[in-house]
Length: 383
Image 1 (cartoon, rainbow, N blue to C red):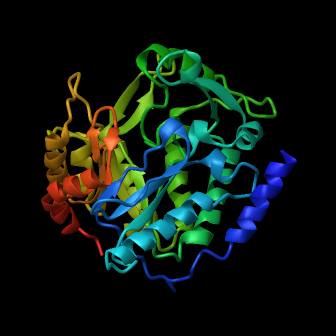
Image 2 (cartoon, helix red, strand yellow; image 1 turned 90 degrees about the vertical axis):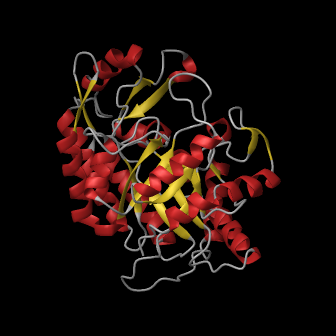
């Protein structure tokens, strides 16, 4: 452990000069617009997607535990390498870094928080889909003050390094998450484990052994505090992956939704950080309509800037989604006002469902097929 700590410190020092100061004063960066790579994470490891085809950005999806394995000591190497790759891609394609491919940062908090955070704030066993070992995680008490302080400090360190870097186009909010970086959803897991999870959340104790129960009011406060945590980014937009606000039954763990509370949170976000608050949703299908009090009606009611992540590719069940559907979904997202559409993993693969036989040639040909939709999305560019 001592050797690992020393290595991380040395890496941090070596890379400390990488953050080039390119944006000055209170000027907002040019927001990314167009098609963005989702940033697949093979084996659930931290990973930055490589630029390919004709796209406008790509995510670094990084576990907080990999970014800050020791309190206050950061490993920025994945992000710094992604910035280098983005600039090389822009240079090859004759595009300026201001208008070209951007790196988007998505830090996975929740169950992916460092062990030192979990030890400091307290944690509970938490199941995602079922109670098997690979679906059982350690969830820190994300509604607790110390956790929120640690997250805010982590974001402040990232902002200090990258807020002035024009190659970093956006950051994703993830303070109030469990397993996925969808911050207004899935507090209690799938149906068969909800009662177990909510019971543990309600009976949680912090690291000092004091009662620290989850409540719906604390959850709502976490979502507000999350907005304020991202105010440290003065020039870089933050993407908030949204659903209709959910309140949880303390006995069953089942959720009920509130359209009005979702709108209140969206308005709070815009009031606190203005146009740096980019609202969106991570499950856009080709059949979506902004009606009936759904999340898309709420998002379009509050208005731009907006982003959307499409549904995953699927050839079974009631949510079949193929490449042709993807092309339609991009147009739907553009019609909703989205300036960023995140592509599903496998878009450049011979088998889009198994994500196999992925090639540069397919990335080129598939992005050509998506060009018309990309043009529509880029017309929604916010600045």
